[in-house]
Length: 110
Image (cartoon, rainbow, N blue to C red; front, side):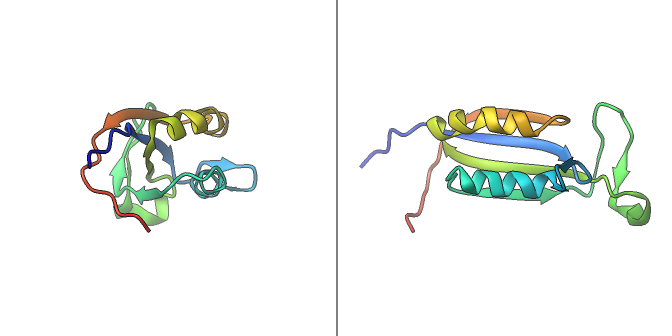
């Protein structure tokens, strides 16, 4: 049976030290996406990177770098991604948000 559902990958690139209200932004995003009934979210902490300011942050100097890159990845249906983008844009004041169409080749039902 072929699944004709359209899926998308939402990626949010932020700095580890970015705050939202009294929490780390990445934690606030995870809780918001769960509240919005998104199927799943993965947060990855980078070991090095830089953004628009061209300042390089690296895990090699942990004591000097609390601003490592964070990538939040969300895979869900196009309809669900479209539904949550306005709330995500409201929360992410500094960073990059991307969306791309993807092909899901295997999905488990649990």
